[in-house]
Length: 110
Image 1: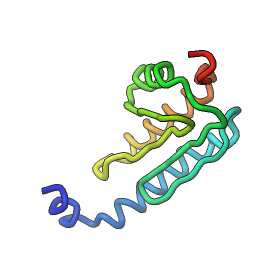
Image 2: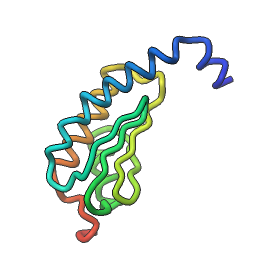
Image 3: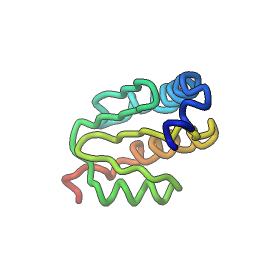
Image 4: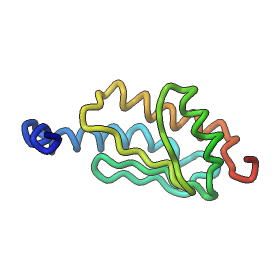
């Protein structure tokens, strides 16, 4: 059913739209302290940190911002559903920017 739903729409345009949103929304993270790299490929966005993040603390912060992100190790990894709206995608990226810019995510503090 999921494949049929995917193939029934213009999935390539959807992926390009999400890629543009992730690129625009996550690019400002490049200048944040502790960020090693920001990568976007299709509908996948990754903010790689210099050090592993404090999982419990950072996940709690994301929930406080109204989004569900479950990072692992040094990666804050986003793979939004293809049905995400532009508004929802911006909210997701804004939450990532806000949480990462606040600091307090270093694993040494957990």
